[in-house]
Image (cartoon, rainbow, N blue to C red; front, side, top):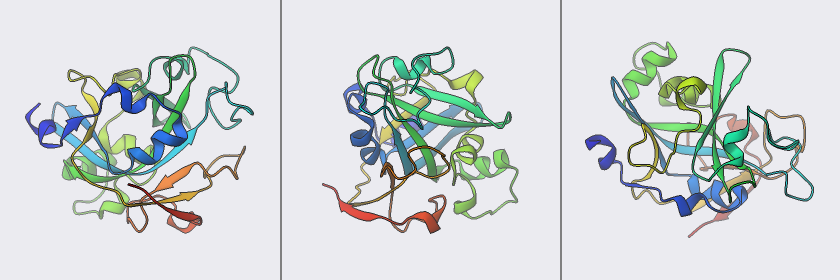
Length: 219
């Protein structure tokens, strides 16, 4: 775990025990680290989206949980700080982070990372040419999981706040002073809800042309 220690402290469980619209912007700048057989792969979170649990009024129609618990989404109804990984198009994976109290099913989709450790291996995982620019490596939720080697069979349900987990969320001291808030993208329902959060001007944010919204100062 030597390399992951260099990436700062493990985020505590309490960090995730709040509504997703509050946790999501606080995740910006934090580090997602994956300990693999080929070394640690890690990236700084630069874009996320919040999805509200079915206890909200109204329920979030774009959330996987809006109709209640199923075998597929059960991780989101469990304790906060766990990885919910699901498949899209039968071949790609996306990763959410569970938040709020058990049973409330708040979730945060990780949309983009800026590579921090293991960029060369991430490039290989993505099938890109050596020296590919950082913006092509983990910009987008499917690319993010491919770059870090995250899959539903291997990583769904892992505890992101556990020191023994191969998949962790960490704080290396990077400070965020401003967050861009926009509507979520790539969905068909509740498309106007301002629940997408990104680091303004970061080249690794996905869909940069859609970054139309207000900038909020954070402390």
